[in-house]
Amino acid sequence: MALEETGISSGFTVSLDAYQGPFDALLSLLAQKKLELSEISLALITEDFLSYVSKLDMASDADQVSSFIDIASILVEAKSASLLPRSSDSGPFDQSMEALRERDLLFARLLQYRAFKQAGEDFRVSIAANSGRFMHPGYVDSTIAAMLPQLAWSVTPQALAQIAAEAIANAPLKEVRVDQLHVPMVSLRAQAAIVRDRLRSAGDKTDVTFDELIADAQETIEIVARFLALLAFFKQGVLQFRQSGPFESLHVRWIADNDTETNVNAVAMSEEDFA
Figure (cartoon, rainbow, N blue to C red):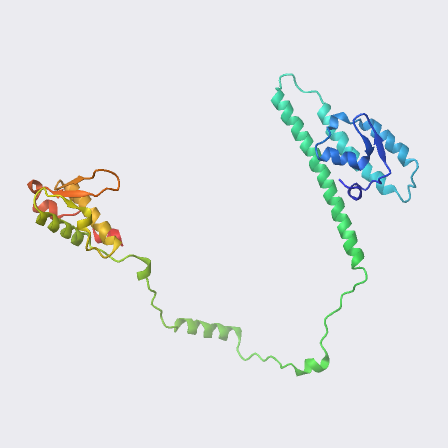
């Protein structure tokens, strides 16, 4: 905490067991947590300041006295709180946390005091820097003003609203394209028919890889549809899967024993699931 922030002259020094030097440096040590408040005798500091004040001109140095009283009151409040007796049943953790809160409160109030002091100084400097400036009212020369055209309203607000309503009502409709928002429609039943026909053509219990089933697929959605068709056929019991490991080739085979018109022609999904 600098000298100009405390408002106390650098001529005021304190002499304590734990610290000897300028008062503002003592506040800086407390704020930076390099010195404990419990090690400081506030009574001795007050006596030293009273001795120091007796040599001052109170007409011109009253600010130093008020600044010291403000800061000293904060220090006294924080130290008195730390010296109050605590209940015997409170554990070391509670006492430590309470002491920590008291110390943080002290530092917060010191910082708050410094912030307000600095804000006041900033206002003083700003006012002094602009004391010689005066606001100039706006002015338009009469010659220039005569050249400005007069604004003539030929339409009432109600008529303007009616014109706007008619323009909006008669505006041509614009077709909003939505095809870019959806993937192309794919018929699950058509893709299931392709899978079924190829597996039947391969023969009963003949392995066919999934890569072979999707070799002619043009879109990713077609691949997805054919895979879902395999799942549907597997659920119906007309298909078997085999895969040696993760990411290996998927082999499927058709089971002719369970091949009935009811099973292979009914797929419990529709193309709306792929919109």
